Image (tube, rainbow, N blue to C red; front, side):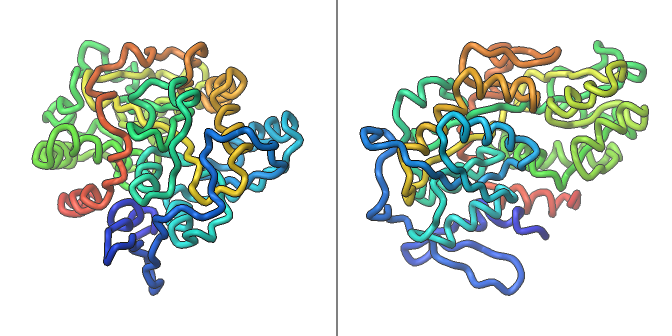
Length: 358
């Protein structure tokens, strides 16, 4: 099993006063340092000179944010050192490195990893000038991380095979027998597993189990990722698929007439997850770290996420691109979850294994 599948709270268990990380292979768990480095400076303290370098650990790949990084370098004349990698593996690296971590900023693909870093005591409190740019649903209640772009779980459907009136208003409706042999899903995909974690948190373990068993009983076709599901939908291979919204928006840039549309449920089936950032308590360049977070939430940064990655902007004043509902129109159940708790991945993985879908 991949390391990302161990990291969050299997991988973040309190042991003998420290945090141990469950690693794969023969690696030895390493305690993470919960104590702030003597070099750490609160992010709100920007009275000092703007540093000319910044170290970012990014779970967002270079193809997605490389252009944005260059824009920030040009704007500040700073040099950014970016370590790209899997979000969960980078979270583990930050804990393994402890007080010696060179990272100033953790840019995570999902809120679960940010929640894990927060629970380990590694993220400092962000100033209200940053936090208040984003709705409470999309930032840490403790102020330790902030979302910069959002993605919504949707049920995409082939319009030649399904009429809108047929689609259930709840994600639980897809476990009914009428959807047998018509569903595509990706149980090993990280975004799907985050959704199941949200399902467990909001609806309880037993109801989440019954939903998984129902989808499995409907002989849902397994795909490796979201894009493969969208491609299968475009071919009419399946009628509906559980995906993140932006894959269809990207696909439509080259296939404008594809017969696939979004369906938003009225519950946690339309979960809003975020990519976001935390400034670490070991940051050696806190002033420019804060400036980078502010840049991501600026109109320029939010326009980039809307038009380049087709995600939802989270700061006010920028609309999402495509035929999408606004975040305000999404159900309360999709926004009521503390996204930091999506770090509780271990129980989700155990449930998926028990149901035998991974």
